[in-house]
Length: 87
Image 1 (cartoon, one colour):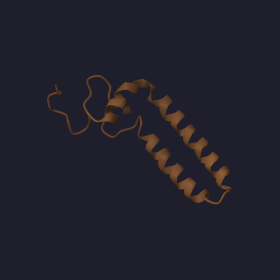
Image 2 (cartoon, rainbow, N blue to C red):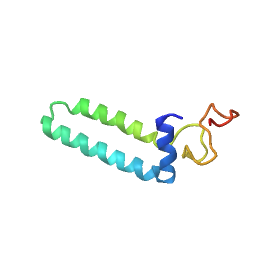
Image 3 (cartoon, rainbow, N blue to C red):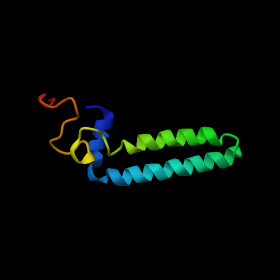
Image 4 (cartoon, rainbow, N blue to C red):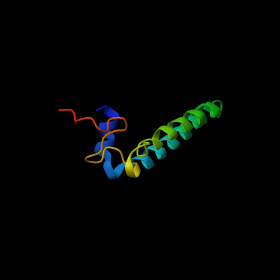
């Protein structure tokens, strides 16, 4: 089990709150970076923030999992259906 799968499993139903908090943190960091650079790198900061928001979207939404909440008890990651659980 990968680290991300383990974290998703631990988050469970709280993943929506974590995703929202992550996006707020990204926005705050981008605003602070823009302020400190005096607007010189706004385009680069916006691009990085957009990519970070896309990554935050994946916290609770992974294709192939019912309900969009991966790691729920009894669920296996996509591609591992039919395999026995690891000891």
